[in-house]
Length: 282
Picture 1 (cartoon, rainbow, N blue to C red):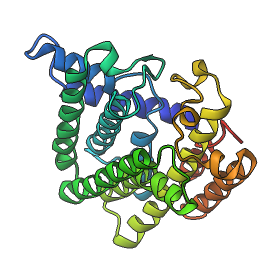
Picture 2: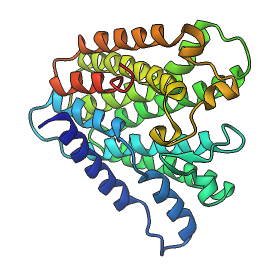
Picture 3: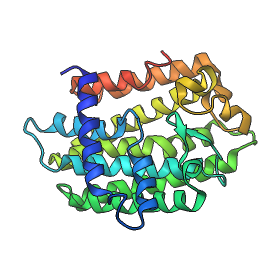
């Protein structure tokens, strides 16, 4: 299958898995469940779940029962992080994925609780996946790093940020969770420790390249194309690659990371996905 078809199929499977696990809106507290569904099932690329599926497929020629649970768990952690990232206390954003952010659509308290609930549900599902204890441990480590990166990102706003701190923010905030998706896919398929490490390195490089591309798009794309406010990073004085290195060098760095990632995996779909992660700015 072409990568686009694979991404669509994996995204649909992930959405079905998530929808089946979030309680219905007519069950109390319905407003909480509605907010959880609103954010977790919002339109999106489902890149992180796809990496779980593709990594598992690269390890095992056979279908891996339960891989969808690991894939959905990553998407729930991602959704949680976006809800909290958008809150007034952090980025105070009005749009996410072309729609009002969760706290704008509902209210701030509901948004906080919806994020909390999605985070808890993510680990319940990760533990139910094959090799669940190891899968959940990888997800927990990546989630902790994500929060570290978010905190450092906030503290660096409006300051002159060194390249070392910039790399730390991006590696923790974005690359850690994407690396975890590749590890998790390999783990559910029964890969050995050396193979899992190769997938981790691949994911970390793709994740960093993806975040650099996101930084570039925040400068160059329209709000309609982004599905959120453009130019917001510069307005807040955020630490970004274009601010530190310029657009041309940022593009070069993202391309180099993708080439390094491609050299680590034999899977053609994973190679294609690495290229896809930056094709918007190449």
